[in-house]
Amino acid sequence: MKATVTVMLKDGVLDPQGKAIGHALHGLGFGNVGEVRAGKVIELELAETDPGRARTQAEDMARKLLANTVIESFKVEVA
Image 1 (tube, rainbow, N blue to C red):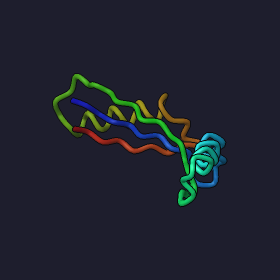
Image 2: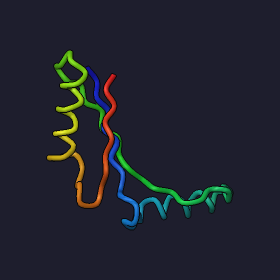
Image 3: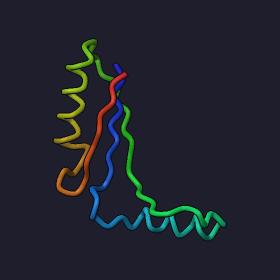
Image 4: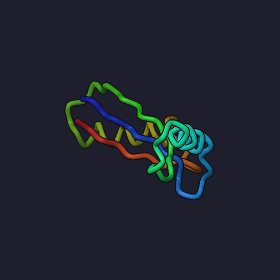
C-alpha cells in the first residue's frame, strides 16, 4: 500500500526557501504570485493491506522521523 506524507512548515514559521522561490518567480515575470511556502513530499510503499493500519503506521513514522512537529505539520494520504 502506498502512503504519501506531505510535510510543511507551520504558519508563523519563517520559510527562507519559500521566500527565495517567490523572489525568483517574481524575477522571471510571475508577478501575480503571492506568498510561497516550500515543503517536502515523502512516498512510502508499505507492506500493509489495511488502509487504517497503513495510515496509522505512516502517521507514526511522520511523528517520529519525517516531520519536526515543533515547527512542521504533516498530512498523510493512503492509496
